[in-house]
Length: 113
Image (cartoon, rainbow, N blue to C red):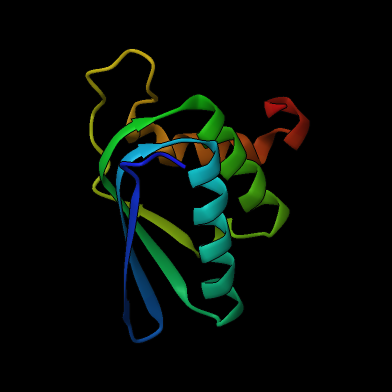
């Protein structure tokens, strides 16, 4: 887990607001996916604010997408505050979150392995 990564949650009725901050890597992806599974089991919709993320490591994104596909989390997740891009060339532009999820649905999980 990245030492700078944080997940802040706030429940409002039938939805959960999740604010992410710091660097997002593979272990962070699994931690986030596990938290989201818990909320989905309770029937809550999830709104994820990615504005606080500094870096999204490609492996972390792949792990997160695979976990979401494995547990059918996509239908309950909405991303908010997507930014245009990042200063670091090794990161994934945050604005592409919705596009990446749509493209991921169109391909096999193996595509990301």
